[in-house]
Image 1 (spheres, helix red, strand yellow):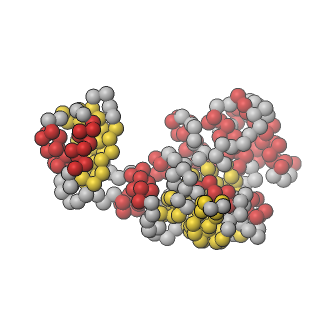
Image 2 (tube, helix red, strand yellow; image 1 turned 180 degrees about the vertical axis):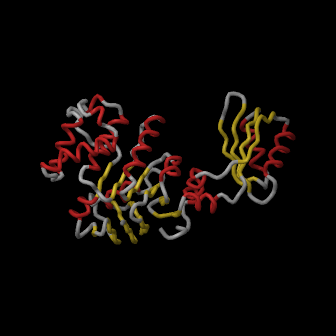
Image 3 (cartoon, helix red, strand yellow; image 1 turned 60 degrees about the vertical axis):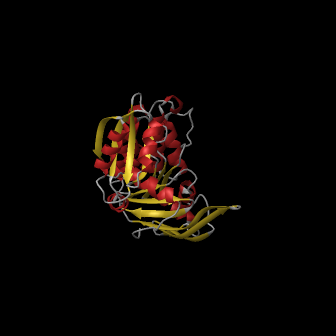
Length: 317
């Protein structure tokens, strides 16, 4: 459904994308991840034919984005970060306006508007002025707009940015529903959401693909080292320094607490990391409240591959 091959894009001396390649199959939800400035939004604008690439090949829904950009736009629903809306219009009024712009016939228009309002969950606020809606509902209105022309491909750029946890949960439910019969690319910094809704993940950094696979495979590949979490009372700096000096420990991340500080500790070998941490805390005279082993998360994978600054792309996407 989506094929990207050796895509590059530069803005003057800045190379935003450097020969990236990946595929998204029909009916798949792909998590498209990367730190700020990695090139995610640039790639999405190229995929939606809003921006030309410098070189490489991109095909969306069977159409070439360079030579068949109109067909690509007709086949794609795009929700950009900071979705542009007319705050003075009512929701229903806005969707009718957008449906006319997208060329929906009069006979089809009302049925499609009713359908997308139901899918995106804005039926109950259809007569509200957009400017009075919460950010979560404004995002839903943008999603309804993206769905109006029945696109085969849906591209969402940071759709949950600025939403509170309950709004994120609600948007996740909406995404699951609308993604049942569409191909979706989702860009977000909320990695737990990617694990819950995406079948595969592509991570880019500095314009290059550094990892691509299922979330489970990435966790397994980058999570071979043992990882424990300890909550310890004492001087956070002294504890972190003592842990970091131990050759059995490769990385320590510390989070300050009121009395007990949280340390996420990654091992560097096959030694019993939990026992080693226990002895270090005991010998230092600090108070240990909790010590537990944790499984690798997608966030751990993200920190690992982005921290390297480069990496092998892994399994073909």
